[in-house]
Length: 489
Image (cartoon, rainbow, N blue to C red; front, side, top):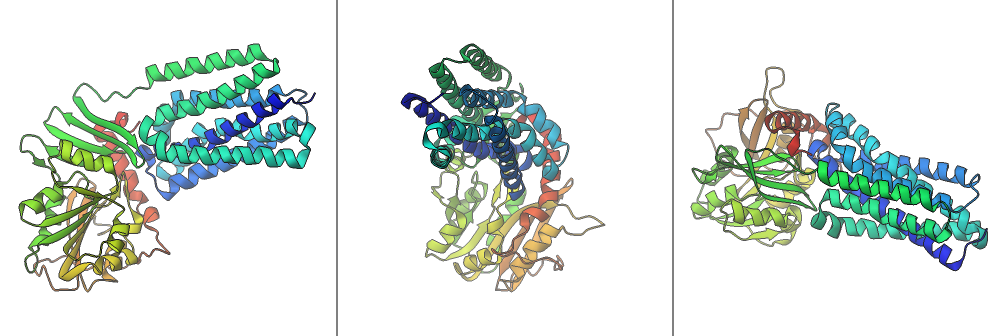
């Protein structure tokens, strides 16, 4: 049996769609994982590893089966099955994530990646060798393999660009995965109809998939409870943003299931106590007139400094966070949408104060806590200027006065600045540490003892995500107990 010109076109379109779906699933998968496990190197490693393993198994199985199959419908049937499993994953992802959460951040993300994405990616992997087998009847093995893998890789490239630049920010994760199910399902169904073989079974599978997608719309919608009034909800490049009011007259900002800001609606002011520690840097030494805030967030620190007459430049990488700071948290100062280190390198300005409050969901941004980052910051500080940095960590205990992550940040700051001081506020099992670093003498009343034994973090060797993993696990558990998993799904 030979392929017609139209038949080969359907084969290439189907390979393109399968390649696009594969990369979109891989990239969008991190957004599913983020509220439970963060977007650390562990999440990316687990997801990429499971993707490659699943595709490899699919390549092998597809190649093996291609020698036994006697018709062209197998490649389209496999595509339809991959699409169906993608649709099914949307329905069962919540219980899988909740179960995986019990395993901890490192083991849980591997299990969740395998349970959610391996089934559909296995069958997407089988599409290419099956396609090569059927195209080689006219083109030969070499040419057919080259054409099919080129088309599939081109689809993967387009899928990757679409996922990051448009699909995830504009449509939300559930819709993105529905597209990943529908697109290859349509190309697979079109291929089957073109061959006029196995049409009945393929149509039944397609209809079943559509029914599953319809069910997912009905049963997987977000519900946060009757005591919650949602003001803003959006998926974007950086995570899921949620702003809501509670019955206790508190406004809360969450990013990827992590509480980033409490705002007291009665007092009309931020309720985050650590902001006062950051602001304290303005009291040290001579008068401070200018400040750079990297990770301005909802603008709690900005409002306080501006009220003191300090001119601020506010850096925020997420445009939507900058929007809600003005819309829902009373910040009227203009934000600069930029990566923190890039701005520091390029700004050409000097500041009396620089503040780092650089968290993305559960994770501190590792590249903002390295020796090189602190050296670049030192270069834009005026004489007597101070760098102040916030981090969430485990509270001190009798067994361990300060955590490994705290010691690492302290030692790294100390490798750049002559004087490093810190305050912390413990609550439950957590503490907000606020570091102050400068080459000048300041804060003489601070009695906190120097922290020894920490590693110095560099751009070349940065183990922050690994040593911070214990904090992430406790933080997730605390959020789950406080609000329940409905805010993480």
